[in-house]
Every structure is written in structure tokens, then in C-alpha cells.
Image (cartoon, rainbow, N blue to C red; front, side, top):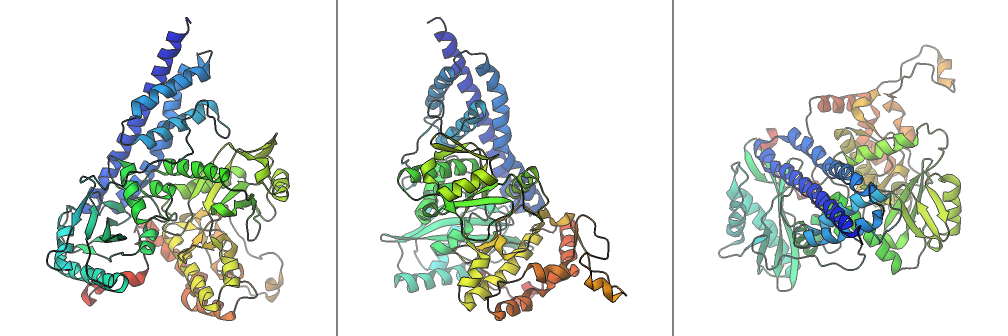
Length: 588
């Protein structure tokens, strides 16, 4: 009994310390997020890019700092778990009325798992709940959104909406933009709802910023129907311009894709914001939406909870993933959950010449870069635990044989101490083989654009094989195998030297010197081969559009642009949706 006051006091101190760390994190997050409006107004694109990296590190750095503060408070107590349960109880009461409650819980668990090196789920000390949770939709909150109705015509309503936001910059031609947007909305209403009648448009007050654009997000409603409506706004030399309007769930879904970097959007109640987005995009998971608005750690928590909840209500087993087996990663999936799991093997098959730490650094590099719609989000998990009977026996035997440093069995549980999880996409090599020629051609051409987009983002895939790329549900080609990825600026693109000796061409080894970092684009056609049973038309059409990939000139040109810090434009919608510019603007 004599130890109880001490335990109670220690629990309170631990709780207060963790909450103080969380408050610091949120304050730092909001401070960086608020700068996005100024960057957009001043066209400070490189500063915006720098802020993206700074904000990404905030959660991890603040958690580690908090762990350093609380560890001495725990290590000096005999009943460590008991005092932590006391801290958990105090923490729950302290955060119960916060508008960012779910983020506070994730922060607590992040600290907890590091202090106790948790394997699987530890109900004894974590804030654990795998059941349903409420997500406020914001219908009763006038603060979250405003509602615009059509009094005269649609163009007038659009002008009213756009005029309500202060971007700190003038519009180039608000009247013309309003008319273009109105025409697109009216066309949608007539084609999809058979009427120009609409109950109104709910527009979120917070503005979404990413890359060089600002986005106004809302929902268009008629009776019990709703559809997203999004206005992408660009700040060009002559002022603000609407680039297009997105009016379908599919179009808006691309905006919040798992292949894109995170928005800067500042709002005190993130769950309320996510709830509104969920009403527009019901197929998007909470994990994806929380991640999209800048909270990847809670997105990861949501995915983790969804997986364990799914396991409790399903019976299929983890099995090998379709596609070509990797030389560096062991890849498997739970087909009913639509994700793949990637574990670094203990040893790598030739000709791979890398290390476990090098692979992890490359995946960390992807996390910290703008994925420009071309790289799949890779969640990194540690110390997961699953029932052994959920694994296909052949798969489990293979994992234990090839990745024993990361996977082992404890009784009836399989422990995985390090794994990456990615959304499942259709492997490009299989897609080209299994789809019609028209679809294969479209995917092949987009593959070329994917490689060029990655280059513009300072990323060189290293391996250009089709098996390392995949096709999303929207038909976009994306890159997902990062074990050979390097920064483009670190490559040296060379032409193959000419030789006066014909016998040089017959040698099994290059007759000229090759240094680390040397890349020879003339060899790319060999690596970028299409499956043998794919129509020759696919290669022909690809080469018509992307043969410049086989030249050092193209790659050196991209490097020169990167050296000038010329940030390219990446649009999260198809080119055909963009409003066409006047000839004078195109010349400018």
C-alpha cells in the first residue's frame, strides 16, 4: 500500500509528459501547415517542398524525444507495467475531449511500443480498440463548410464560391474561369442526373495545398445523391487560374491516391475533416484519408487495426503474391485484404549486390520524397504477430528458409519483426500479357511517362524491368520495387564508347571502363523488354513515344533541370480534363 501514491504520481507524470510531447507535435504540425498558404501566394515552390520533408519527420522525432523523457520515469519503478496502466488511465481522461483524440491515442501507442518493445498487440499497456469507431461527418458544423446554392445561374454560384477564399493573390480572369467551371458542372448534371437542378454545394473551408496547386474540396448534392466537386487552382505568372473541375468519385479519388504525397491542410479537428472526405469517397479507407491529410502515422494505425479486424472476420490464408518472385524481397498477400507484405530476405540472389540496411534506406528515401503519383506508399511495420494457421504452409516454410532473421514461430504464433506493406496493384508484366492489345499499349505508354515522372522527381528506378511496376485500378502505372532505387542526380549517364576493334563487340565483359554510378541508356531496350507473348505493336507504340529514354541527352536534360531546382508540374488528374489555354498563354 505504501507504494501506491508513488505509483499514482509516477503514472500522472508519465501521462503528462506524453501529452506534452503530443501537444508539441501538433503545434509544430499546424505551424508548418499554415505556411502552405503563404508559399502558394508567393509561389515559393522550393520552400513548400522543404516544408514537406520537415513535417514528415515531426512525429517520429517528437515520439523519440518523448521516449527519452519518460523512460527514466518507468525504469525506476518496480512494477513498470502497472505504472504504465496508471499513466494510460490518466492519459485517456486528459485527451477525452480533444478534437484530435485519435491522433493523441496513436501518439501514446507509438511511445508505448518503443518503451516496451511490443510484439503484436499488448492489451495490457496500449490504447487498444479494433472495433468500430465513429467518424464525425460534420453535417451540423457550419464552421467546417459553407453551402452555396444557385440563385441565378451556375457561373454566378461558382463566382460566389471562389470569391469566398483568400489566397493572397489576384485572379487572372475569374469570370472566364467561372464560366468554364459552370459549363463542366452543368454538363455533368445533365448527363448523370438528367437535370440542372441541384440542392447546393457544400464547400470545405480549409484549403488543401500540395506541390504547386491549391484545391477547394466540396460535395454537390441532389436529393439523396452526392458527388465530389474539386477546384484545382494554379498560381501562374498572371494570377490565379482554375485548371479544371473534378466532379466524379473516380476523379477525386486520384487526388487522394496512395501514390501521392500528403496535403497541407490546417483544421483543428482532423477526424471531422476525414469524415467529410469519407462521405465523398466511401471506398477510400480511413487509413488512406488520414494519410492524405498529413497524418501517415495514424493512417498506419488505422491500417493495422483494419488488418487485425479483418483477420477476425475472414478465413483465407496468407499466400505468395502473383508475379515474378523477387531476389531481395519475399512477397506475400492476404487476397481478401488487397495489400501485399514484403520482407527483406536474409541473402540476395545474384546478381543483386546490396545489403539489408541499404534496402531499408531506399524505402525510407521513398517515404521522404514526393511520390508524384508514381510510387506506391510503403508502410513499415515492426514486431507483428499472427496466428500460424493463417499462413499457407508452403509460404511459411519459404519465409522461414529465406527470411529467418525477420520471421520465426513462437508456439502457434508467427512473429515478423520487420515488414513493409503496400497496396496491391496489377504487376505490369502480367498486365501486358493478360490484357487486350489496346490496354497493353495504353499501359506501356504510361509506363514510359511513369519513368519520366520519376526522373523529374529525381528518382531513377535502377531496375527498369516491367515486373517492378504495376497498374492501379485507375489504369496508372506505378513503381513499387525500391531495392535498386537511386537519386537521379547521383547517376552518370554515358554513351557506349565506339571501338575500332570488331572483336570488342563479341566480348562477354565490357571492353571499356565502368565506374560506380555509370548508366548507359543505349542498353535500356534490353532491360525494358516486353514479355514474348505480347503483341509487337506494344513495343512499336512505346518506342514511337518514348525512344528518347534510350539516349543520354534526355537524362542529362532532366539532371540539368534538377540542378536549377526547376520543380515540375504533376497533375493528379488526366491531361484531358484540364481546361485548354489560350494560344497566347501557351506561348508564355
